Amino acid sequence: MARSLSYIAPSQLISMSRNPRVAIVDVRDEERSYDAHIAGSHHYASDTFSEKIPDLLQAVKGKDTLVFHCALSKVRGPSCARMFLDYLSEMKEDAGISKVMVLERGFNGWQASGRPVCRCTEMPCKGESP
Ligand SMILES: [Zn+2]
Image (cartoon, rainbow, N blue to C red; front, side, top):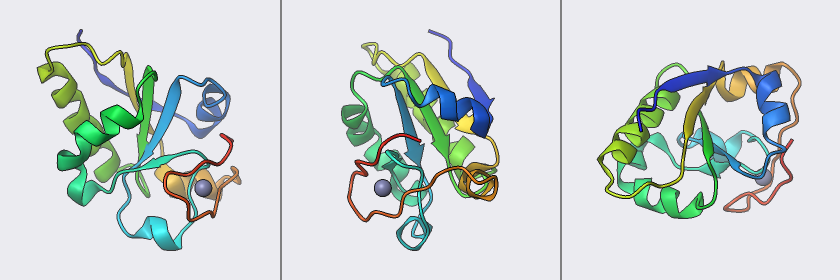
């Protein structure tokens, strides 16, 4: 069950996100509330991420790929993704997640390249995947 972190480009995520087994996890903090987000993404703020991992696991039941991102995916995104990987490796049972990825250039890169964003205030976002 060795898993490692890999990076994914926005263009790859666009095609991957049509797969119902892919979940996007936004770990930005309060920026999420005044900025837009990727449609259908989950929100687990990085400052409380470690405590919320069990909730996240519940929320992504049935998914096999998780794509993490923060604003730039430089610090918070990869560090939460690593925390999540560590958690998975310590779990006794298999959560069914085979891939943990980080979105290159984060939300800012996504938005800057003209990818679709969602501005709803629903939690969790029920927006269509891009
Ligand atoms: Zn939304």
